[in-house]
Image (cartoon, rainbow, N blue to C red; front, side, top):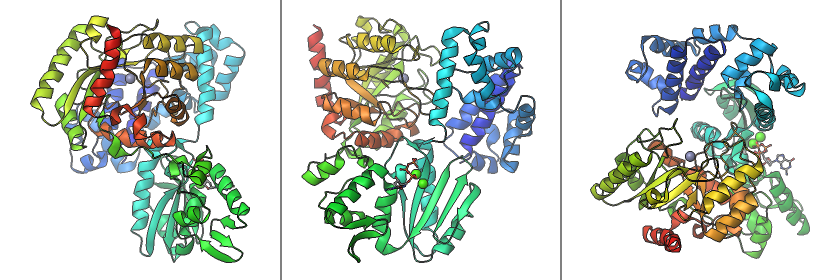
Length: 575
Ligand code: DGT
Ligand code: CA
Ligand code: CA
Ligand code: ZN
């Protein structure tokens, strides 16, 4: 689907217009189009072929013409023209968190900054901080944004890379002579971000597979192509490595290229201890191959229980596999409901009914509807009065829709001083309360940790939403004292969220494992803003497994009855 690329072109046009100080009306209209195209569940090219682009809300004649040009030629002239009006090094500055178009315009006009290097210079010599309206604090934030950008550059979120990898694997499997295709590498381990995608193909004739593969749509450059392997660059900007292997070595190659490298090294050490040799072709005793066609044969010949890809990180899994103590990891079927979702009442695009129906179709027993609270003005957060109306709507929907329990909940803002955005008597009307920080995330460790700890003192808070506030590749996690947060959550029996949207995955794997070890319950929620978003739960499941979570560690693996009991235990303590 081209939707994402088209959306980012419109987004960049809006940013460029803003840098150039042009018409706010046009800027807003481009941003709106970007959002609409980005949220679209249908393929924009498909709509275009059917002549239906004009039906999209907010798309006038002008915009429809630009979309038409893009679908025909892959580019938009107006976009190219705008790019010519700013120095070539400016657009990449937009990717730095804490640096928006208005500030970029300032540093360009007033300090003649035209590139990342020059931006770093004016930070270092203090001139950035001296700009009117900037200051030390903002300059520091931008400096951190640059470091963050450099750290994450070149890695793609799993939620972007995996659907593309799955599509490529599907196309590969349709090539004549191909009998098996697997995604390997970090994508198979379901890491939160992917350096490159590794695909493994089982086929007799490597050359033909490679020839067919390098002609796939969506490849912008063939970096290398031989008789058994190829590396290509996709238009999305990341690399894909394909390797063709024989049937008798497929399992050994899959194990090798799944990694992680640290896991492989440790497993090879066990082979050596047993006077065996392990490589990407098989497990060998002298010259004889004793395993290699499948991964399970290799683990079992080494005296290990099978280790699922998500935990192959050399974080204790090998010892557990030797001792027969590997955890029985969480599965999608363990999840009985989703406790974080937004409707049109705040910033979602769907209704309570649609969400409930979709959740029911997924086999869930319950959902909790959680709008934003008043201080999240951009997200149309609800003041107390509107929340009471929304609770009434939830109650009515719950009666109308059979077969699923709909809980009245809210995602309440944690304010600057750590207090909650609704008074106790309003919170008391909710079945469940999630509290989240949405502002001031760049504060010092002391400040942000204090805010969360303060919020956890409230007897009304059941879950802390997206605890660190990070957005993969866009915004750094809050500088929290995680050990203290986890200790307090354990003491007060408050659950921490694993926000399962692939751009958040917050908490992340290692923190989940810490939380589990301290007996803290984790709530796996999608933070859905549309019906489709409910499917993001799969990213949460994988991340939970990477954190060694079992069903017993998960709040929403409880039955509806058990969940209510869990909440009520805290309510009792309030009295
Ligand atoms: P990425 O691409 O950075 O997200 O991470 P991976 O894990 O996919 O790493 P990649 O693509 O460099 O290599 C794929 C797998 O191949 C890796 O997980 C383990 C294996 N591998 C690569 N290089 C080595 C190596 O030098 N030694 C061993 N034992 N395994 C390696
Ligand atoms: Ca890789
Ligand atoms: Ca690779
Ligand atoms: Zn939120």
